[in-house]
Amino acid sequence: MLNCAFTGRAISLGGRSGKVSFGKNPNTTLETTMPPDLGGSADRQGTNPEELFGAGIASGFYGSIFHTAHDLGLKGWDKDAAVTADVNILFPEDRSYYRLGVTLHVRLPSIDTDMAMQLIRAAQAVNGYWEVLEKSGMPLAVTLNGAPIGE
Image (cartoon, rainbow, N blue to C red; front, side, top):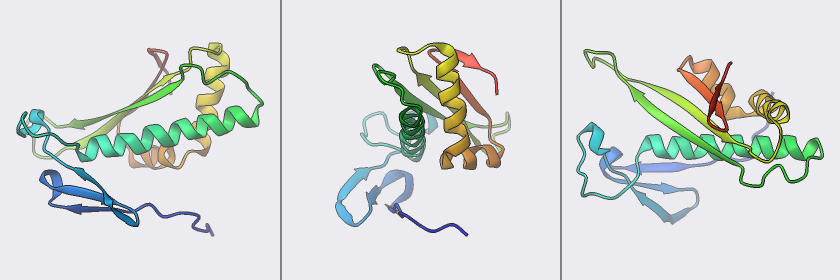
């Protein structure tokens, strides 16, 4: 049995054309908008569920790399390090449904490729977001310093 250490909460009011507030502080609010690529107005400023989902994935995965590097006693690995998550909306040709796909772009320029791969694999093994993504069956890809890596 797993014990709950923390619960993050997001409240949506108005869906893609509304607001999202977070946690116990209702003053932390973001406007949400439909992306122009999906028919939204280019004039309207805001974020969308895919960007918010990507933010969680990227920051969580970076955190797993951080803890793995710390456990291994690595120093200086995080100079210019970053994780970017691209969350894609994927449609079949008839647009009868949609799915999500995720590409993680891991940037670890300060360490050699073998160590970077070790950190990525270790992060995949312990990261809760990665576990959910893998089990979902959605298309997943990872790049390291701009180059695709095999799964």
